[in-house]
Image (cartoon, rainbow, N blue to C red):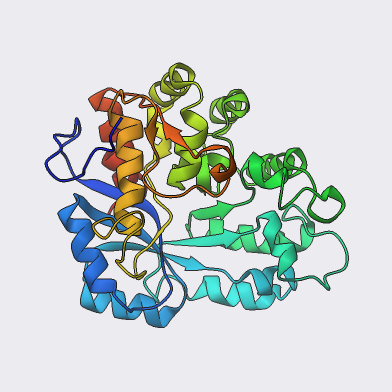
Length: 324
């Protein structure tokens, strides 16, 4: 079936969109990309600003538009420079940040190849970080694991990277240890795979302090499309706990993702709108998915979610959590 176009398409949901997971690494092309977002219905977003300077510039140029997340350096955390991390948290509010972001996915081992020992966020040495987030009232956007496809390829050496089950166990232990810390778990808590949804459902039932976001588009489309009925039931049942997010980089070049008229951000947004709002069947993902290129690519089967669920997903959940 031909790929739908964002323009000239009557979408099921016609309200504003909050993108709960984006990045800004630099200011190049930022205005151009934000203008495009506004044309596509994205009225606000949670931005992971990778420096205070970027945050200051962005707020000056686009006041009262973003919720800002402070990136807590993986280098400092893994390097056990805890005092540096605590100092960063202490100044977050005055710097205009509303939450923190941490990245502790298995790929960190590629950047710290000389690291010796075991790195687990549940280790007692990292406890002060989470305690300080709680005492300052900051939520935490946390990326702890990756797609099953990565563990079958990039992370196939479990002696180096560990297993996904180990990482999910670690994540659950962390959630359980800090019940007063609000977690936004990136990428559907690394569990959009259909066979993993029952465990994520158990987490939602057991822990009131977690929500998940739907970044990234290819991962969500690839996995949730495998059983649209099960995925749809899950989204409907837990509609108050899921935030729309693209994992888009707002200052990337607006050049094509699949064609001259399709920017990378637009392609990500299009993929998810097809997934959430339509009953499309076997519609090609509008940008490459390197995890499925060798078997013909990823195809989207739409979930055709009810409008009340779409309102929660795209806007109301983010508004309730971050009060933007």
